[in-house]
Amino acid sequence: MKIAIIGAGMAGLSCGARLKSAGHDVKLFDKGRGPGGRMATRRAEVDGKILHFDHGAQYLTVSDDRFGEQVARWEADGVVAKWPAAKDGAWVGTPGMNAPIKAMASEQHVHFATRIETITADGEGWRVGDDNFDAVVVATPAEQVPALLADHAPDFAELAERTVSDPCWTVMAAFDGQLDAPDTLRHAGSIGWAARNSAKPQRAGNECWVIQGSPEWSREYLEEEADGVATLLLDAFREQVGGAVPLARHVSAHRWRYSMSGNAGEGALWNSASGIGVCGDWLLGPRVECAFLSGWELADIIGG
Image 1 (cartoon, rainbow, N blue to C red):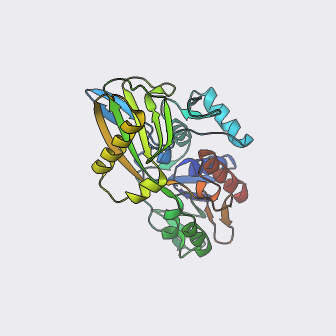
Image 2 (image 1 turned 135 degrees about the horizontal axis):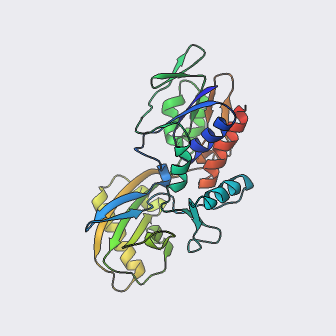
Image 3 (image 1 turned 45 degrees about the horizontal axis):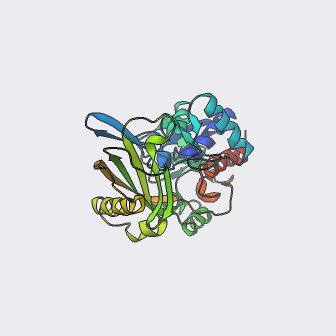
């Protein structure tokens, strides 16, 4: 079949790779400018140096052999490395968290910077963008599913509406000197997680931190301006670290409206009669592995 996948994050790319290996003709569409999604790495220039911040997912873990085999291949290719500072069994992309996504996207036909807002029934297939397809897979956060599928797969759209994601305000800060603090800090007041990004494998340079607000705090301040949020979270971080904190040379904030997915209790969704499928972490749980497995399972349901 000729299959369109809307969303080229972990779930969409996992699904696309497995469908491609089964002989299908697959094209992926993603509104982002490049590979990453919620495993994104942000660049910033400070005093002539390019700094990097993993401002989305901080690490990944493995509990399923299917994902474990993929992580082992990534390790052999230098795409991931262990990061025990986060927890036992934690892995990060190298040199940035988006490295696995980049590797997967490089082997597939992905149209980045392409926003798909509607799909249209066209004969026995579907019109997506400027092309026709036999089937469509939606691999976006749950909140973006209804706009695409309410008219074509209302049961899938209704399930997505009931599966709500948590938001997350994330601050990226580069300091003029090293902080006297452990590499990670979690569940500390308004802070859900903070990490010394520059301490991750294959990172170097300035003292760079990623500071993420807790889901409750992020929801309370969701519609505030980025500068104000950055000030509040940075103040909370200084309070938790204690002692003298060096001058921040760079501070910016990013709002993830759909950061940590819900869990609908489904592996993947597929309607063979209409040729519409859905995959994503929101169907299995808020982990990178869940996104990978959802895409894998949908590809297996569609079959060869």
